[in-house]
Image 1 (cartoon, helix red, strand yellow):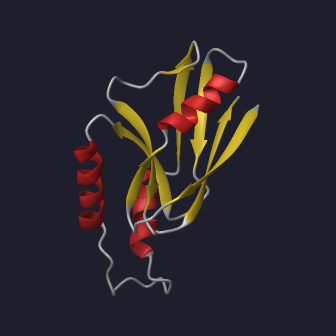
Image 2 (cartoon, helix red, strand yellow; image 1 turned 60 degrees about the vertical axis):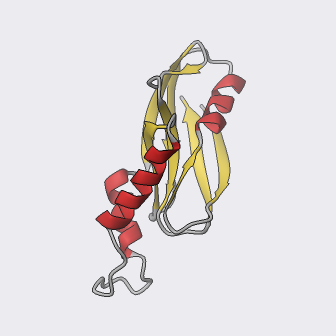
Image 3 (cartoon, helix red, strand yellow; image 1 turned 90 degrees about the vertical axis):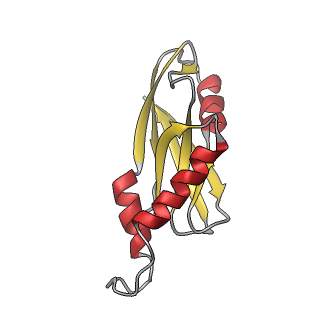
Length: 131
C-alpha cells in the first residue's frame, strides 16, 4: 500500500479547497496503472467531497449553502462552540474513493475533489492511499 499525508491550510471558517492536483500527482508517482485511490480526512470538523470544479461559483454557492444548512447557534450543547462544524463533517463525510485507470483519475468531465473546512482557519491533513 502507498500512503501520502498532505498538509492543507484553510483561511476561512467554511471553505472548499480543491485538491484534485495533489491527488493526481500522487497517482502519477506510484507504479500502479489502475486501481482505487482512497482519501481520508482525520478531523471531526472537516470533510471531503467531489463536485463541479469548472465553475468557481459552484464552490461559492456550496459554501453559502453549508453556512445556511448549519449556522452557528448558541443553543448547541458542545462547549467548544463548533457543533455546526461537527454536523457538517458528519453529513459531508470524511472519506471517499476514486477509481483510476492508466494513471488518470476517473472523475467526470467537470468534477474535482474538494477538501471541506468547517471550523477554520486551521492547519489540516489529508491522507491519500492506494491499495
